[in-house]
Image 1 (tube, rainbow, N blue to C red):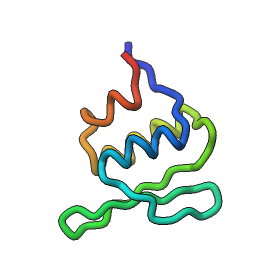
Image 2: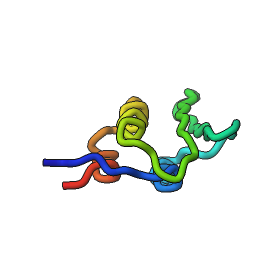
Image 3: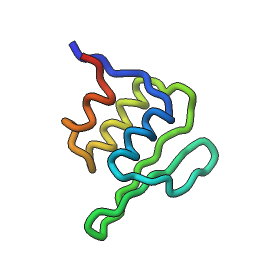
Image 4: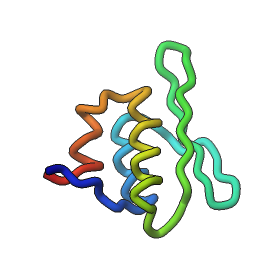
Length: 80
């Protein structure tokens, strides 16, 4: 049964940069990532913490799934 990984903000940043997201800004402990596809801005926000709770990782996965296929994201967020 697949299990959600507990990731750090740095690990999530590495994954999202692979999908052409760039760091647009940071305010406090939240990092705003952005990419432009077909003249449409796609924005994700992640907390910059050493280790994220599983609920936060799941929320980031759902948020990123709006822009990136969940099939492509799944191996980064879940273990087999």
